[in-house]
Every structure is written in C-alpha cells, then in structure tokens.
Amino acid sequence: MNGGQASVAQPFVDWSRKRSDCRGRYVKCCGGGMDDLVKAVLAFRDARDWRQFHNPKDLAISICLEAAELLEPFQWKRPEEIAVFLADDENRRRVGQEMADVLILLVSMADVLGINLVEAARAKLGENARKYPVERARGNAKKYDALPS
Image (cartoon, rainbow, N blue to C red; front, side, top):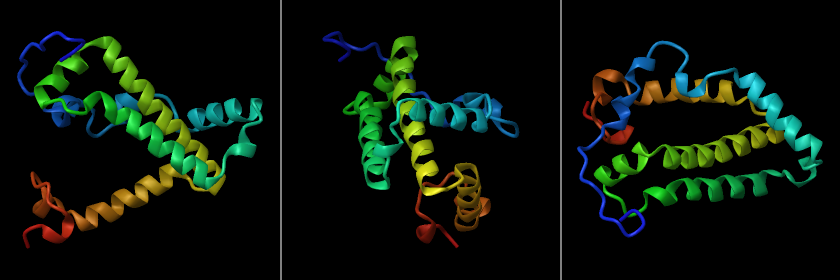
C-alpha cells in the first residue's frame, strides 16, 4: 500500500540467500568488534545514570516492545511487498534502527545478568547443531522433533 500508492510488483527476494557471500568469515552486517559495541552501550547508559533502571524484568519487556516495533513495518505485507519496502534506503535505515534498539537492550540485559552474549550464542549454535544436523535439517523448516530420521 505504501502511503496510499499501489506497490510495484517485484519478484520474491530470498533474503536467506541475499548475503551468502558472508559465509565462512566475520559477517559484514556486524562489522566492528562486539567488545567495542558493549563498551559504547554501557558508557552511554552509565553517563546518564540509567543502570539504576535496568533490571531483568524491565529490560525483557523493553526487548519485546522493540522487537514488536521491528515487526510493524512487515505486518500484513506479502513477500513481494516486503522486497519493495526493503529496496528503499530510508525504510532499511528505519528497520536497522529497530534492530539496533533490540541489540542495545540485549547487551544491557546481558550486562545486568552477567551473561557473555557471544559465549551464549556460540553455545546455542552448538546446541542447535545437535538438534538440527545438516543431513536431516537442510532445506527443512520443521522443528527438530519433527525432522525426518
């Protein structure tokens, strides 16, 4: 619908293959170091004396609220409409801002809980690799307990 204008039909974009050139090396979408990001997030928070407001419940709520804001631009759009939406640089910038809000809050929550996000993500990837072995899960969107044997 795009502001009352009919959207131009675009072919479906397979976003899962869009950045396949990033496989096997540090992903371009996350350039820079995680440590630098964590330091910047915590410095921003501490300069404003906001740590006092950061507790697990409120941070979890905030993550959910920001994730909902990330969903909003995609709601009720067909894949072709999403491709058109994301082809616009301003729309991609806004989506990136919502993604950044979620990431910043995750970093803040990890700090409050004393969880190393990188280690937690690596551990979760290992767990998922066991649940979803390539030979059973490749090209299959079923949950691990419903994968073919």
